[in-house]
Image 1 (cartoon, rainbow, N blue to C red):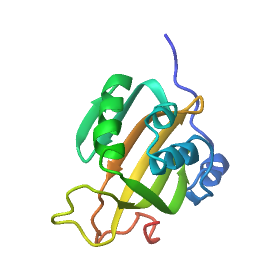
Image 2 (cartoon, one colour):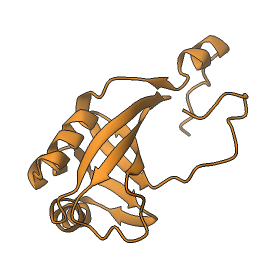
Image 3 (cartoon, rainbow, N blue to C red):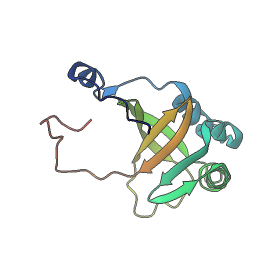
Length: 146
C-alpha cells in the first residue's frame, strides 16, 4: 500500500505560507495565450486529463476544455489582466481583471475573478475560475485576506 508523504514540519509549513509572486512559468504562458486568443497555445498549457471548473461548471479532459476555450474564451475575446499573483503551498492563485465580448448583465463594471491553478510537471492539471464576493470573515490567524 502506498503511503502519503510525511507532513512538513513547522519551519517548512511557515516557509510555504501564501506569498505574492511574479507571474511566471506555465501560468504566465496560459495568461499570455488567453490574451492572444490562441487556442493551441492555451491547450498546450493543460495536462491531457486536466479539468476546469468555470463558475461551478466542471469541464473534464482535453476535448471538452478545447471546446470551452474555443467558444467561451477565444470566441468571446476574453482577456485577463493579472492584478495579484499568489503562491499557496505550490498552487497559484491569479486574481485577474476580466474583459471581453461576453454577457455582462449583473456583473460589476470592473470584474475581478480568482483563478486557482494546480500545476504538475509544468502543466495545468486543474483550473478553477471563481467570481468571489467580498466576505466579512478574516483568515483564522487574524490577518486580512490576501
